[in-house]
Length: 136
Image (tube, rainbow, N blue to C red):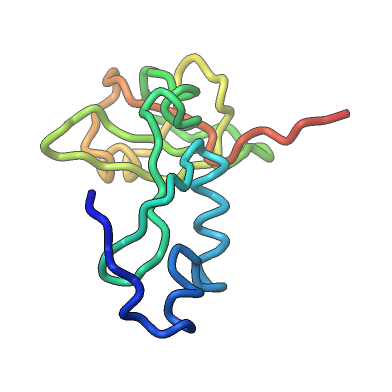
C-alpha cells in the first residue's frame, strides 16, 4: 500500500477520491452490512474506496453452518433467501434458494444438487442471504 501524489490531479478529481458512484452505493451498503469497512485506501485504477474486513467479522461466514442435503421436493412456504454452497474448493458452486435457514437437513431438487455438484448425503454450507430484521 503506497501513497499517491494527488496534488497533480484537478480539484474535481481530488474531490471524488474514495467516493462511490451513486449506482454502486447499494453494493457498498451490502458489504458494510456484512462487516466490511473503508480503511482509507482507494483503488489505484478508479479512485474508489477499497473495503476490507477480517474474515471473522463477515456475517455470512460467522452465521453460516454445515448441513446435510437430501434429494426431494423442498417444503413449500414463505422462506427467506439463503446462500447454499458446496464444500469443494476446486469445483466451488453456490446458489440462492428459499428455505428454512435453521433446518437440520436441506432438501434440494435433483437439478439443484446437480448445479451444486453435490449428492444426497453430502454436506453443504448454508446461510441466510440477508441479516434478519430486528423486531422491536
